[in-house]
Length: 530
Image 1: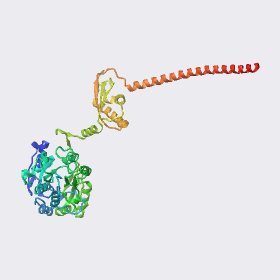
Image 2 (image 1 turned 60 degrees about the vertical axis):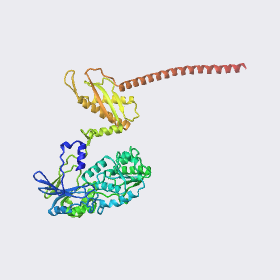
Image 3 (image 1 turned 60 degrees about the horizontal axis):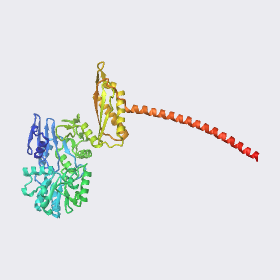
Image 4 (image 1 turned 90 degrees about the vertical axis):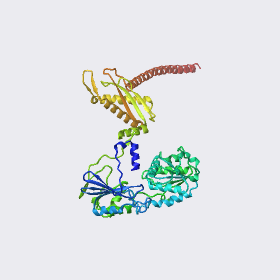
């Protein structure tokens, strides 16, 4: 709750949010007919709970993220007794964590990580850099206590890591002296053997502390060949490539990098198949909905539920936004509701909708084309369009772009103007200028996609001109007329040249014939003379 409070304040919604802290087994009434009991479970974060929602038609039990850890670092065990109580009373529907459905057995205890972390930190010759999930409060506490045991001062990197450690110290989950921590800007004043850096970046996030160190971009920390980097985490599905790239960069810089299951430096906070079976055995639900995890994991969890006695007809696998209608003897899928991630811009004053997001992606990928067009209210282009390209990589020259734009405008004015305008008086017109803009934008976008294989954002700005303004004759028409005239003149010149050449050839032939006759005569005369 303390971490949630910080996020709510950061989001600027604290003034309209009410936070209520609860204790294990505390019951909160919701209206006249509903109540929720908070049942302690175990997870990688402290103070995690399952929820038992009592309704007029039965109890709905939601596990949240869970595993059965029988030796948690904080000594707070899952309330198996209360779970079994609800199972004996009868649970209408169970919604259960499916994340590790593909893995057999039980998840090891969080405490099993401590001996391996202790050994690696004690054996390190230089500085130790450790990255893990900031929300894994048990892991963070173990790392800090182990660093203190081996005489190492701790530097914290990453805003979320700083926030979590600060909140844990406020709540008493981490009890260490203040002088154990040092400001990161003073790292050069400490011996390497007495330094441990705890940071974010376990998932290869681009701007996280470890990723910046791997790119040699961190202002205070430069990697050394004597450093040991420990990944006390595993990649979340979808982050594998970014994590691999970060590890490669660290190895390239000469550091010793320790990662992977074989080192025993990470355990999951989500139960495996046997944990899931134990939850099903305790709760004994009539209906079952696997939640959390990928779709394939939910399907496998459903099969596990069948093996534990749940009827296949009583299992539903849902997508985000799907709803269900529960009755005492039935469970059916209801109407979907709006769901998903909504993005806020940096000002946090508005939601970035799908259209705005697509436009931003277009700007980043292919740039923007702006077109300014003066068009009269009676449907004539009265001046040449002004075309501007920003961030567009293209082989087309500006003249060609202007020519394409003129053609698209001319086509819209000839073929769409009647649908987009209405004459309201002798010389007055009512024009749908937004429609005109969209027609020109879509036409130019199609042409650029076809001709240049790029899809920039096209922004058309129409400048209305009064009716009766003299029309501008597009260059495309002038070019065609000029081309025809040039072709005609060329043909005429060619014909004239052919005629002249014919005349010259005729004269030359006559001359050659005369010379040939006179030559023969001279030869004959010479012969007679002889």
